[in-house]
Length: 243
Image 1 (cartoon, rainbow, N blue to C red):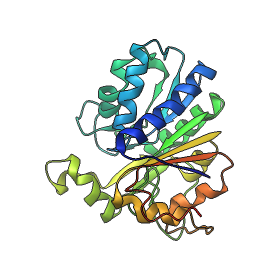
Image 2 (image 1 turned 90 degrees about the vertical axis):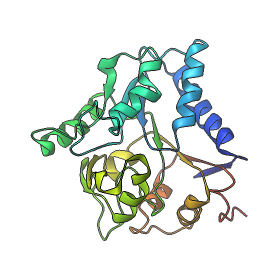
Image 3 (image 1 turned 180 degrees about the horizontal axis):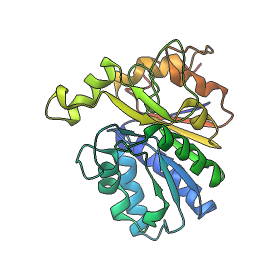
Image 4 (image 1 turned 120 degrees about the horizontal axis):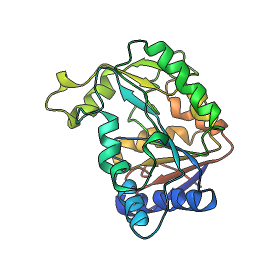
């Protein structure tokens, strides 16, 4: 696990975008695993700027980490809407190459199974982008006594609901479950890029740097992956001891 500490959110965003840009330039048909939330917004802005300067997304395939159960794609709080707004509608990606779990499927269990199958058919994810929750979750794989391997429906913790309520009018509007890639799906990625910004993430980042696998900190499993880059701003790195 490689840690890169930047001065601020803007530098973190650019450093993350640079890694994705290099991936696309080295393999024009890359399969990218993408994340949502507040942290990657700046990174997506830099990717759009790179597209406007000539970066080609036409052969790129994407798989998003998760989607809220119960939200239609045109709901402004859905992750499909987020991705369209922040990236997809602003670059030349083939819309048929975009994959986001459905939160309104009539058979979500089948949806989850087919999602993992689709990733496998594409040869797996070349580069997976992750954020990290304050409680150490990645995707919506919440802390617990057990963690699921495959894509599944996850019940969101109260901590996560509270954290995500900033995107909704009121906390009662936040969905209580989501379809998410499992830890096995994430760990099969060839390379993982984790972004974290702000002191509220500092404790979780410090825990994943400890040489301990703790199911109460799902992101600690990333230590078992051979190719993980963690890009932080100074706030997120404030409790990290890299000596």
